[in-house]
Length: 300
Ligand SMILES: Nc1ncnc2c1ncn2[C@@H]1O[C@H](COP(=O)(O)OP(=O)(O)O)[C@@H](O)[C@H]1O
Ligand SMILES: [Mg+2]
Image 1: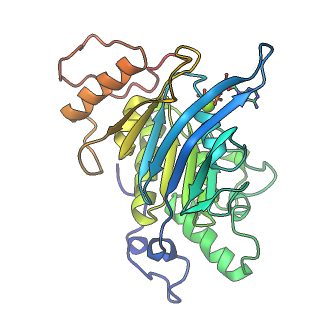
Image 2 (image 1 turned 180 degrees about the horizontal axis):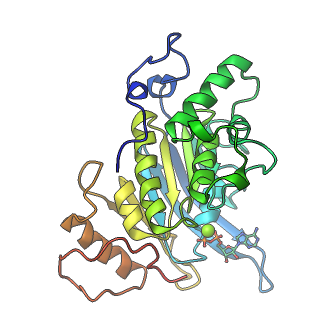
């Protein structure tokens, strides 16, 4: 696809005052560290552990994709890192400091855009600005973000007047408004049609190249995970294996981004990850790439 990031935004200090536009890439980035994380929820038969023994280091600037069967605790993990939920055991650190509730250094976006329907897209994006942002700086930041996600011409439209893909781009821009250190995405493109989804994946990579935030993205699409991420974390359902810890595998994805969607090495990893999810492809051990895209392949 063609780039939606205007060329002048991919250089440092594109704006005359040098603020906002590329402030984020000049900043030190924070990674995420999880030590012995567990989360149990009450159930009729007693507390049920959804996550257990989860140790994980996400270095600053990494894109980590999290896959796993439905109900294995992917959203729970993301909510914990977002500080929207508290672990039953273990500790989460962002940039070396222990997490205590929601943190201004993190931002979250979900499968549904969750925009305020009565507000314009630019107002919705502005809702993500840090508290106390000066008016002018806020306006500039929102304008920059709308450009970044290719919505500058839809700034004054309301969510119902735009497509699902546009609304999701506005949601992404809102999450980016505070220049988060850590961007948490829960199946962010899951509700979009296959083509829009591919475009959004490229947009996310362009945004990450321009503002290299640490990203944790939950997806049920193994191809999406392999296209986007430096590493793919495969979680297991503790319901099926009550004695084990949550991480089934962590797979390094070879090659630099942007990746070739038809890459043979990725096709092999895809087969491996799908097997880890209990889906056995006809390819078996063959390395031939299969048709793309196949948005939903994991059981849910
Ligand atoms: N607040 C909660 N109270 C009780 N059970 C919950 C709560 N949140 C999640 N769960 C349970 O934890 C399990 C994992 O949920 P979730 O993290 O949403 O899975 P995933 O995102 O991997 O599909 C599910 O069985 C779900 O019902
Ligand atoms: Mg979920």
